[in-house]
Image (cartoon, rainbow, N blue to C red; front, side, top):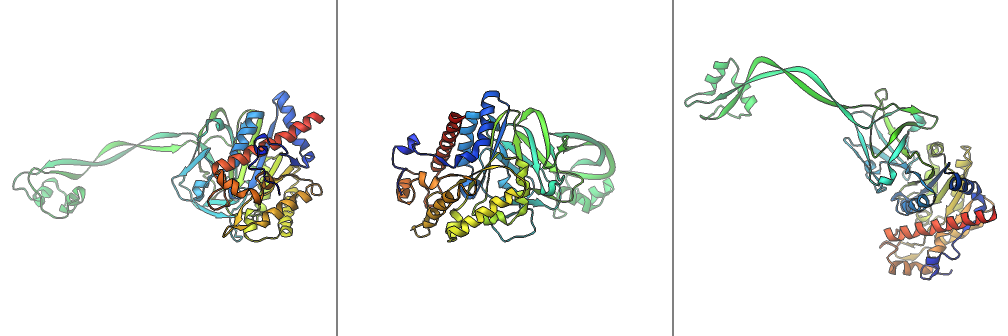
Length: 443
């Protein structure tokens, strides 16, 4: 296996290609029309494991493609912080209440594990989830909420309003203790009990000293206005896939609040888009996930339609290799994954990305990912998928030490550094653009 990571080829991108790129023609046609007319939204969804959940490689691809074709929005996002795990740096979620979560890597349970691969829910209201956009490039005009069976569980708000409520409160008299006064004498004077005075002043005994100020509660009341704040729900619409809100003004903050008619609250994801043509590049990843984990939950495939993808990119295989899954079994799960997508009548182009080089535990050679890479390329034409060989582009097993020297792979020899993931993103972008330019030359 040749090593490309330590050669000039990695900078010039020589031989960096997508196998069987003819399956991408529908995507390329939309990109080409958008370049000339600026009238298309091209929606790409990248699905994977921990290499994708952190959104480092995919964020680099997103930025690159949007710089070339236009920024139509952030795409799919998920409040990973509420599930107590890592996610993208482009947005931040917070809530005044805790949420329950469950991941597709665990044994199947009757939890709302859908499009995000992580189920997130609460069984009671009283919450507000705040979403803040950190990167101004991803301010949004529309927000779509994805829930199981598209149930109307959430409202949206951009601000709260203050209401004034008229009421009364107990009148309190201020009394300065004189020399020789006992608390019982003061209580008798104001016709209240000693216990009431002690409670109002947080006294633990009857001992008082001259000069101290006491608050004396009385039986009288006085008028008082109370302020209460509440979120103002926006006018939400719905379609077959989501409940959504559209704003003329680009937003960088919004709140998810309980729908008053709902009795439970289950969130599978949010989609953010701009009033602009171009590319949205959504990333969906779960730490530790395999194709077989996604295959366990039909809700994932049902909800994938809500993203209206033109192109799907798959990045899975590292965790299969750690479980010593043989190449035949890996390909079987990949094919089942594609079959589950096609059964939803989703006519979408697919790129399968081979897993990157890694070591197994004990720094043992990971021959599984090599076998996966070769097997994926072998089925590309028969299964009508395109393939990008990240394994080969990153030097294969013979180049892994060079990855370490260049600071591209992490100390566990499995995950990559920020620099490493960004390099992967740049390489994939160039391979994609090479295939696109070849398409334009032929058409």
